[in-house]
Amino acid sequence: AVPHLIVNFTLPHDVLTEKICGRRVCGGCGRGYNLAAIHDQARGIAMPPLLPARPGVCDSCGGALEQRRDDTPEAGERRLSQYDEGTAPVMQVLQEMAPVVDVDVS
Image (cartoon, rainbow, N blue to C red; front, side, top):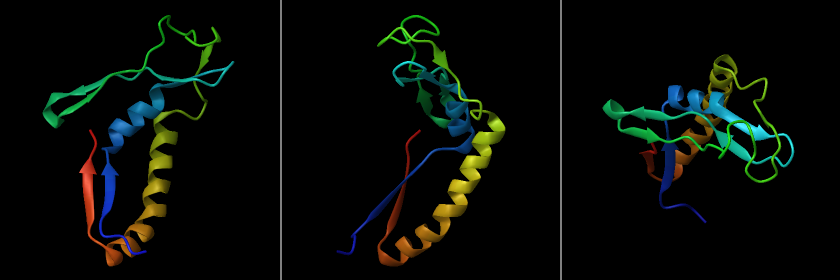
């Protein structure tokens, strides 16, 4: 089946990088949290953090929250560049199949 419309969700790279750097994961059960609170009225961005009830402690199992070693601004930008490079050819093909609508999810 050929799609009638393609929806492409977008978010500025600096916001994505901040969210990447704010990620925390429970070492015990794997539950995810995010410490980044992003509020930029000029761009209409309001993304509250996903915090545990007690700082550094998982709400589900009481395990310690950890940050991945590669959740750094440099690694985040590198991942986003790789994503952009990998999806550009796919988006070109999709644009030939159906209209593409970009939706800013900030």
